Length: 101
Image (cartoon, rainbow, N blue to C red; front, top):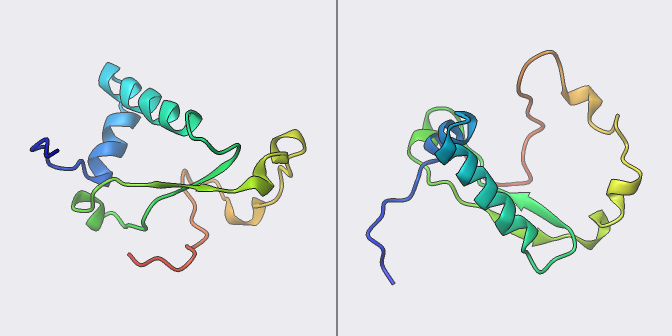
C-alpha cells in the first residue's frame, strides 16, 4: 500500500521529538511502543550514520537487531564502560560499525 507520504528526515524527526511538543511526545512514545512490542527480549537499535548536512535529506529509519546477550545487562550495568568517549559536550561519537555517512 502506498500512503503517498514523504519519509520524515532524520533532522526533522530529531527536531520534532526534541521539541517536547505534543506531536513530538507522541512520536517518541510510538517509537518506544514499537521497541517494547518487539518479539525480542533485548535489542540493538541501529540507524544509518549521518552528519548535520545529510540529516536534512536522509530518511529516519532504523532496525531492531535481536541481541540476547543484552538481556541481563540491565541488572549489572558498567556505568564507566564508555566514559572515555564522553566529555562536557552534549553529544559524543564513538564511530560506527561499518556503515557509511
